[in-house]
Image (cartoon, rainbow, N blue to C red; front, side, top):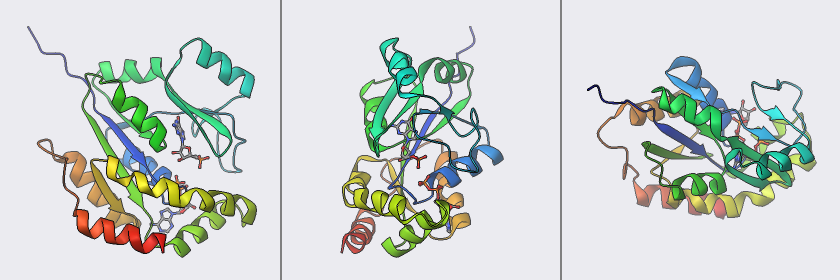
Length: 209
Ligand code: ADP
Ligand code: 5GP
């Protein structure tokens, strides 16, 4: 009897603006990873496409999806709802496809708690500095200082969750960071405890000061 081959779940989280969406898109474009397209109640950015970047829905529609148990996980982030819809994800994993998630620490925690049978790799992305993070946020949101500041306010809390992830990577040079992640994903034997805990801890301290 042939053994059933299931896909792997890969989760990327980070403080907002560190670069996880950019990395997830690059990983998926160039490798065998299917992106889990989330539902959200936030408004699309000018370059975002409905059904590709997110399924943009109203709050009432989102709440209906919660009530009908459609989400593998969901959370409220920056005053908007975000969630990963169960059916599509399981369908892909059960066909042996790897699924990559760009979700926050709350979603990662919920998925881990479910103790699913699939292999899970969790990766936390850090920015090189707070100044660079702010510039990236401003750049992405068309110099909207209000949005950038709102997201920076959350930084100190969000960054503390790095300890819950299998691997932590600093996204300074995009290409180098991407290659590091690929190396981790291609290492079939072990992806755990690859962090230099001391180095990461020092970097996080520098970000918090
Ligand atoms: P996140 O999904 O973590 O909120 P994004 O992927 O949207 O972050 O990246 C935020 C902004 O920073 C985007 O405009 C993106 O193009 C840019 N960016 C991402 N990685 C880098 C990098 N290594 N160097 C410079 N800019 C980057
Ligand atoms: P953004 O508005 O910048 O696209 O995303 C804001 C935050 O919501 C990011 O941390 C992103 O990873 C997170 N996020 C996006 N989709 C989901 C999701 O489906 N579930 C959860 N828990 N977080 C999500």
